[in-house]
Image 1: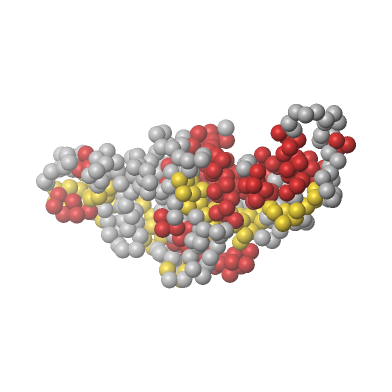
Image 2 (image 1 turned 60 degrees about the vertical axis):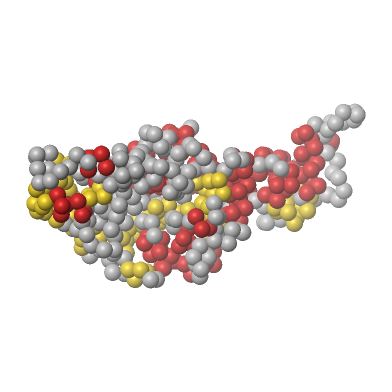
Length: 428
């Protein structure tokens, strides 16, 4: 089960403190590149304009904690990197609890959870902690230490291009900007890493693949600002890979218009993997599909997910972990759902029969030479149905829908019919 290998890689990446910029992003990309050599790590200087946005200062955090009036160290960044408010400015001093609590963030409805909170575009400092811990605090003076820095640095992303037979491209994107959370962060880049490994092992894909690992929102906007013109011309399909690691459900988030090949393939694959999959609308968007499908960009990027971001109780908290939420089984399911979709796009060709009228199947070993009153064997009937539907106007996906079977159940059958010279691929 490939999910075990993906889970092990997620465990390796777990301790790294990621944000939209910084050493954690670079270290994550470096470890991804160990699995997929050829990944190029790019940098964009702070202050660079990207459409309506500006690449922010780089953030570095070395140490952060609070000492209570009784001398106890709490909210220790070294123990859990969710304790620090993301992008906190440096601060050191002794302050009252009344002052301190203005900079503390909790989730009263989830008292055991440390919330994930950030302040990327307004300078402030703060700590995140469980409500249970907060409730133990009282009046007195607290020592606060945040050894961080904001400086003109760079934003980093990873990019890989796999050249296929066609110049048409499939975009695969995931984000690498969250600290230690499992489904919302690590499931995406780890599954995408192993999908990229699989694609690289194929001698020659039908389509070219553009694979990117970016900080969410600012990373995808920055990437598009540099590449969108050629991407608009070449991108044929694609998926934003996010929240693919739990094993509760499968779900699908459409493109803005909902009528691309990415949408059609997603719904077909999920119908056969899990007929009870959840179909969301564009109004339920929340990740980088917002940028890829934005008006004027208009890329055909859908999302195949397990439990969608924002739809599970552990989302954006310390409870989103690699033990109770993301599992090898869940990652395996997420990997295979997207791989099935990519295989379907690769195999979704148009075929045309090479003979007029029904072919003589018996002389090709595809039909019994003794005719009886018994009904045709289902496999024989499937071969005949396939030939009858190969008119050069229907794609393999359309044929699979007519036959009401998963497209992957037809791959071997179409290969046999091609070998017997009964059909030909009209895409060539």
